[in-house]
Amino acid sequence: MIRKSKSLTALLDKVVNIPVIQITLLVILFILVFQSYLTCFLKALKNIRAFIVLALMFYMFSLSAQTPRKDSGANGPTPLQIGDRIPEELWDSEFFFFNEQLNSTQKASLKEFRARPLVLDFWNTGCAPCLTGLAKLSDFSKGLDIGLVAVSEQKEKSILSFFKRNDLLKGTGLRSIITDSRLKSYFPHESIPHLVWINKEGVVVGLTGSKEITKDDLLTFATKGVLDAELKPELQPNFHRFIVDMELNRQVQSTHDSLLGYSIITDYIKDVSPFERSMVGPYEIISYRNRSILSLYRLAYADRYKFASNQIIWNVSDPERFEYYLSKGEGIGNWKKKNLICFESKSIGKINMANILNSCLGLNVCVRDSLVECIVVKAGKGRTAIKPKSGRDFKTLKNLIKDLRLSRPNWQIIDSIKGEVLILNYSVKDFETKGKLCNFLKENGLIVEKDKRIVNFLIIQR
Image 1: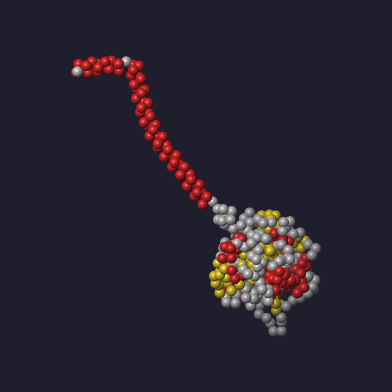
Image 2: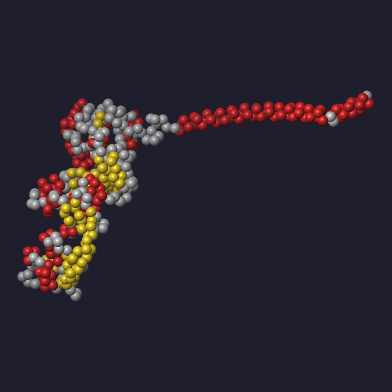
């Protein structure tokens, strides 16, 4: 038995040592091992594929949850147009309401206005047309079953400050939503006042300004739920006007562009304060109201120049439109209504007011420096004033120069004296020549020199 096994072993050794048999065995062994690994790999691959499919499904569902639907409002609500119905969530939203009668602010929703016609009036304390428009609407709406809600981006502090110093809206019972951003996202607009008219069914029936609204329009809206007034001009399809893109500091033709600011010029408005300045977030709103055209240009250049009357060169045929003293005796009340204007701007940072005025008014007003001959008045040694003598009248040197600038616009007189200097009473008619003026000043103890100086001139031209 042992012998047989030894013989078999020897035989196997011989067979195994044959090269072909060795290769065959190795191949079989490799296949067996590979099959084992392949089976494991395929099982693992199945698990991996299942994992990948699960991961992809999770990603798709999570992406679907994160991607806003069209009506979800994730990127802000879709702006409402005429014919659209006010969504439920807007009726339910709470806002901060400032009450003029109570002089305080409470949180409330728009639900109380839902069953009757409602007007939303977007305004700002620095907007003169807004103030007169609100006063008009408050008056027109008396006795009508209609809701009137003002809407402002301003904070309570600005609103309170306004009512302390301005009586225009006092006693109106005005209710205003403040610190608003939500309503404006539903009713975006470039300029104020901006009025949204909503009938008792909750449907938007009008988007207007306040200037075109009449008492009959309000009556028709209150009783029939319709509005006959025209669409706000800036929303009309064929409307184009020059406005200022504050971001690019250039003029653009625009209808509904989203801008960082605006500039508006309006006609004379009765009973408004002459100046208003406020901040709404990063925006500065400045209003100059009921100003002459010339005074607005003076303000535009005030940080660099001060123009005396004889430093203004008129290259227009109608200078009486620009300042009252040039109006040839027209009644001041009538002249103001015809020629005074209001300028308002909303911007981040400084604006080029002169360029805006030029664009809106169709002018080409500019500053020009010229080297001209001047009469320079200096104080005598230790001289700042003289004491009046008995029986003699005195005036100031500043008054003399002011009168001469009006009556002798080509004479350039420079007062280099600090403080006030009294001189003998005079008549401008006595100064027919510069020589007579110089002699008069010397007689009053002043030093007079002729010199050439650079003078800044404001050129009024189209």
